[in-house]
Length: 176
Image 1: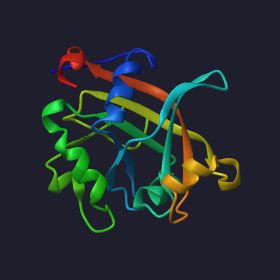
Image 2: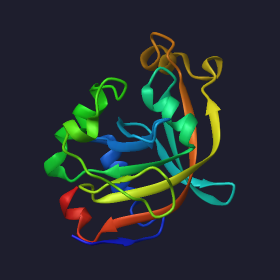
Image 3: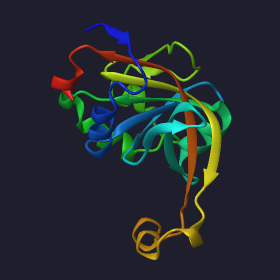
């Protein structure tokens, strides 16, 4: 089905629903230009500095962290319901050791405004350029959250991506 360009806020409820379950797929490029995909279950969409921004937290231990630091852009993609199991695969296998695109039979397609590709099989795509990063400050986080989210001290870096383009399939609400 054809995808059309839409506004950054047009599908926020659907984006948050997919973020909660099954997760969204974050795509970046490694230093060799190979695409890497990782599942994210945390994030936010909002307005910062007067611009539409998608914030994605990535742990410094993740392969994707190095990719984001290198590329400084990313895409976020929402899977159709029928492919929801791929979120589990992409969230449990490391791109250091696996070509997740090939193993999951996913197709990287050129983005309109960033180097990182979109995933053709997905229904919704955000293209983002990193405009700010912020490291979690452990002493500023509520102790209950610190203990449950970071028992090993593997803290997130928050990548603030200015949303440069959004594409969606017309019938995405029925298929998410």
